[in-house]
Amino acid sequence: MHQAAAPTPGFLPPDDAQRATLHNEVHARPSARIRLPALIFDVAVLHAGVSREMAWAHLCQLPGRADLPLERLQDNFLRLRGEGFTVKWERHSEFSRYTIVQPLPVHATLSAAEPDLMSHLAVPATWLQQIPGRTVSAIQLVMLNAPLDDAPALMTQAMAWLGARSVVASLMGSNAMNVAPAAASPLQARGYQHPVGHSWVLTQFNIQGDGFERMLVIAPEGTSQTRAGRIAGRLLELEIYRLMALRGLPVAKALGPMLARAENELSTITARLEHKAASDQELLDTLVSLAASVERATAENIYRFSATQAYYTLVNQRISELREKAIPGTQMIGEFLQHRMAPAMATVASTARRLASLSERVARASDLLRTRVDIATEAQNSELLAKLTRGQEMQLHLQSTVEGLSIAAISYYVISLLLYGGKALKAAGLPINPEMAAGALVPVVLWVVWRTTQKIHAKLVAKH
Image (cartoon, rainbow, N blue to C red; front, side):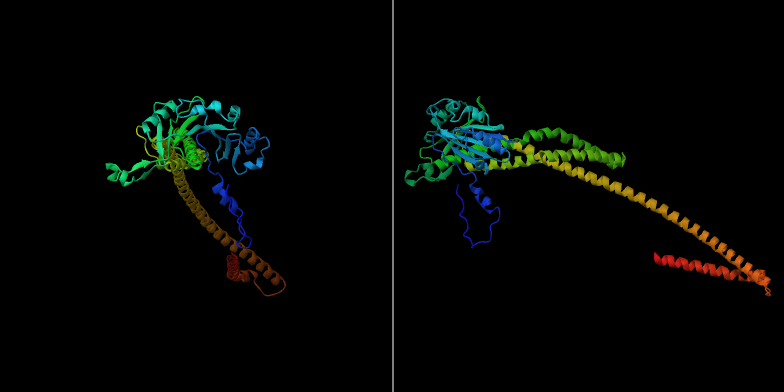
């Protein structure tokens, strides 16, 4: 693994905490160097519930690896070299890969017919069987050397090797090479360009009796180890990402009936809302139940749909990296996969959009119902306010009536006191007529009491 040199102290500001990790991410999974002819076993397992410690314990069971430090698995990549083979372990977000690279047995050359490969596995078969997780992809990739000149003879040998009547095949690494004018044929002299590639790949995309798919790569002598490593990496990743992308299809199919029921139910709710065929509380309860089921389905499946789209993007990238050309009489791998994956991916994408649309429509229906409830509430509040206003007016009239009676009662008591005072003064010898004096003071007393009441009202109003 190549790592960037540490910056010279004093020349740069302090490093961000993640600078080194992010910088070295490009080197996290270096390409393998594969010497041809080679036999590669690649197993990808879903590792839900499988901890890093469990994977480490399993890797420790390889011959001579009992003292493998757990720290070596922290970067999610590990390559272990054995006697005549290499084991590579990778941990991704949803799956782990175990890749075993070993020399091709002498009996499995291109002249063989359906050669047995499992009996020549470089690691114990029980170790492979006990990999922690659930198998999602298992591939036997054979890479060998042979000339690519005689296409019909090469195709006959390859089909016999695979034991197939029909295969999917591509010429990889194709480009256009102009032939020198001195050696050009009449077609080439008129500008014809002959496609040239670096290797063939053939497969059936079938699971064999041993649980593995088989792929055959034929490359000419002189193919470099780095090129062989890149070819193997692209083909193996293409198949793994294809299967991971298709994991969204069963989910989409399972959601179909639920979405149909929810859409029908929402249509019914909307119609009842339009024609006011049910109470607001009844509609609200039904709508809340529907919204909860839709949001639950969204929460449970949004990751799967997003992952499907991401994996499908990687599949298309790997197909484009193959730079395929057709081999006469066969269908190209990329064309084969696109024709079969495109409908499945369209189904997943359509279901994801359908679920999102349903969630939005439920939200809009909720807004409509909320608006109707708000309008009804405002009408009730207006009616209640009108009743309160009428009640206050009646209370004000009653209060005015009571105030008038109060003024009369207070004036009566004041005049009575003045009458008693006049009688007392008359008894004391003063020449006064108490009844005449009290009668004369009645208007004055009424005005004073009324005026005092008005001042009290004015002070109360000023305080509020």
